[in-house]
Image (cartoon, rainbow, N blue to C red):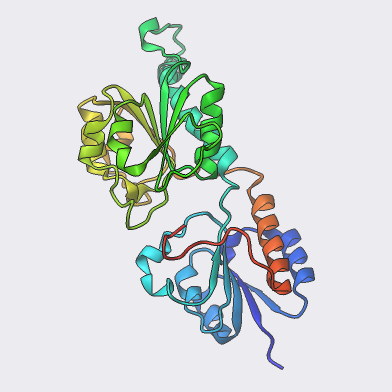
Length: 321
């Protein structure tokens, strides 16, 4: 009898301990760990479950695939492979596990600017005792933060913002009921008006057809002069040339950027050398707790799958999140 295959893309990062746990939960399946396309194609017709990384488009087209678990939150690959949207497999992600590190990363970026830490780093490197003008240091207390994308990351960021004494505005596609730690909830058609009131704008949006280049020249023009922008969502939600223009003109005081239109960010991009920009190479979600949290989600879903129960963190493939 031919056994079903669970394909674990090498990108998954689970390790031997998690692999043993998965094997105990699925004793009747062949578990194969590989990212090699030839090895994947050798078992292609038997793959029913896939934990996917770089080969997710290939695996999404496996003829017997019933369920794909992403080891990340983003389902951006559906934009490049729209034929997968109507295929019958269930798609789940690990949304929520990034909220703590990314929320803290947002405030690392913000405090880098508000406390003028670039000044400190530069002068420490030069062994120089110097103090900045007090007028170049800012307090977050009493300031306004706008958060685009009120999933787990946005909500965690809102919680931290309120702890700093900030007023928090959030936007959603549909406004139904209040969200904890959000002082004012607005529909997306109030986006530009909200930008004009925010001292700090945090983009935690997924990349979908609706959010592509949402932050364009008109959006940055609507921003409050001297405001700061942080992007920990997806790079393609931002028109990068419009962002660069807003930073060069000083309409935006600064930007902390973890994601970019094209990754890896080109060494020729002016963003690298701009004094009012902090670049991190898409590692806001990194944490030693990542594998534990992701594997807990996967193993719980594996039990649910075998028992015929609804899975957790199901992605609406038409919406893209």
